Amino acid sequence: MLSIFLRTLLIYLLLIATVRLMGKRQIGELEVSDLVTTLLLSELAALPLTDLNIPVSHSAIPMITLLFLEVASSVVLIRLPRLKGLVSDRPTVLIRQGALSQQALLSARLSIEELMGELRQQGYNALDQIEDAILEKNGKVTLLPKPAHAPPTAGQLGLKSDPPSLMHVVLSNGRINLEGLRLVGLDTDWFMKELKARDLTPEDLFCATADSLGNLYLLPTEIKKERKRKP
Amino acid sequence: MKIFFISAMLLAVTLMGILFNCLYINNVGTDLKEQVAALPSPERAGTAEAILGVEALQCRWSELRRIALFTSHRLLIDRVDEQISRLCSAAQGGDSEAYRTAALLLSDSLDAFLHPESLRGVL
Image (cartoon, rainbow over the protein chains, first blue to last red):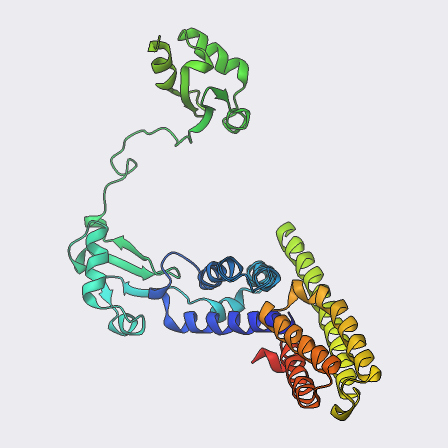
């Protein structure tokens, strides 16, 4: 067990260093430590399942160690942001004020074709449409278009728009979701009144969503109708 | 922070378990190795002294085995089991050559069993 614990520490640090050196492109949407933990956990969980000679403790110890390392590293990195550069890469500016940095592209090991692919995926077809492009820590490219190529906002067009209001699920499978109602600042009485006004009961609905402005979206249940049709 | 403290506590409990297990296995394992070294010479296989020595060894191993089942690889435990059985039958049958070989193999098996609980086992 002692060797398993120390091996977990060693392998974790080695994997962090390896993935960190591989660069942002290998990461996908995860942070370096998340990716390493995911890689190790999936293998560890399978060990005692596939080999009955291996005691469960041989999986449990590395899992608990990884849990601690993952949580502790995130706590330490929040408190000591200077250390962040050791574990994860910093964002790389690929295009600054319309000028493409070939050096940045090279150091990120990103080809021009791949960058063009990113542009196309985000609805642009030429480099000169982009003011700034940043390769983020998770390997995604953020594009900021030049004003001439940016979609106009409601403010620029002088249009009035309501502030965005999030919809929450207030009923699911015929059951009222009190937490959802609380999140939108409404209560069961209001909801029941709304249903009564529409001649509905909670059992008639598959789901209902509402926002803090009192907008309600109702989806009737199909299962109940089918049941009703059955003799 | 709550999750951090929970994970830190889990790790602390795990480390205590690891430490206890490491000390216990090393203590009893070293005792067993000493007992193997102190067994009567192969020429005395078949004597009551040799049989009692091996039985005492078997008894001590069964204590350790109960804990080891939770923490050690089954193959390592089975190897020690096998060598102790061999040693036992050689001691009872008076086969000095088989007794010598089984004692040597048991010592090796105990080394292999203790290896993961030592710092050498890390690499």
